[in-house]
Amino acid sequence: MSTAPIVVHPPSPGGGRRVTVRRGGILGLAHSDRDVVEFLRRAGLDDADALLDDPRWVEWRGGRAHDYEAA
Image 1 (tube, rainbow, N blue to C red):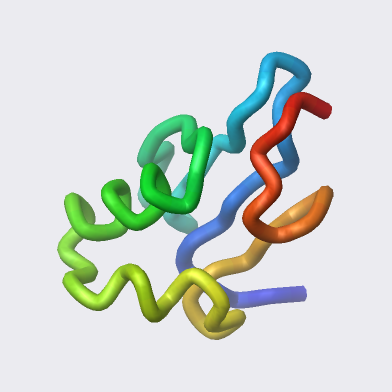
Image 2: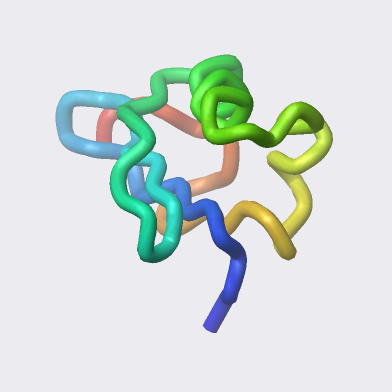
């Protein structure tokens, strides 16, 4: 099981992916990597672009990473 602090959940039926912080709540519903990066920047992670593919920081659940199409 991953211990990454950021979780990008599976694509929803309507499109987009919920982004959460472990034990910290929901950051928002992302429809692109740009949205995820913005959520992370608002959470105080200035180097968010570099973190998307780092499994120590971001766990992609269900579906392919970087895919936001409807389930």
